[in-house]
Each structure stands twice: as C-alpha cells, then as structure tokens.
Length: 119
Image (cartoon, rainbow, N blue to C red; front, side):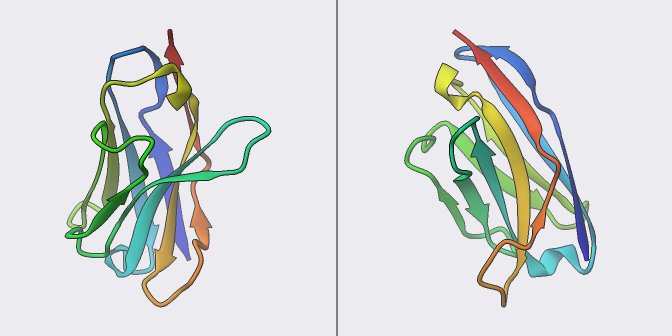
C-alpha cells in the first residue's frame, strides 16, 4: 500500500504561483511513477504531469506546458507541482497519484487539494 497526502492548494490571483506537495508513504515510494491530475465539476480527471521513478523523465500536459513543473525528492518521499502564471482555467481539485513501475494504471490516489485562481 501507498499513502498519498497533498497540500499547498489555495486561492491565488491569475498570474500568481502555487506549489503543491505530495507526501508519499508506504511501499518503497521510489518504485512508483508519480503524477498529478486535476478535475473540475462535471469533467473527467485530466492528467497534468508525470515523473519517472528516479525523476529524470517528466511529461507535462500541453495545457500547462511552460508554466507547470513536476519534481520529486526520493530522499524525502515528496513530489511537487510548481505552478506558475496561473490562469482561471487552472482552477480544479488537484490529485497526486502513484503507480508501480510495472503497473498499467494509477492505483493510489490522494484526497485532493483545491486550487482556485481568481480572474
């Protein structure tokens, strides 16, 4: 089992920045590919960014490319999402997720943290 706890959400003005954090505990966190997803009411969960087990490889959704950065610190068992130049349309609940490197699906999810961007 892996437990994920997000923090760092809140209210920010358009153009501002936030950093989300995800604390990872349980089975060998460094064996898990990590990701951030987001979801708005009535819409499907959207993948925002992923990062490989060692942190060398990342993938960022086109909608946030150039503004968001994902990183991880395996010594601290933390994953981060740095969000800059925030837009109103970035408003969503953001979820941290994990999947074992051998798994096809994200099997572990945090409870989510609300990010609200005021225009």
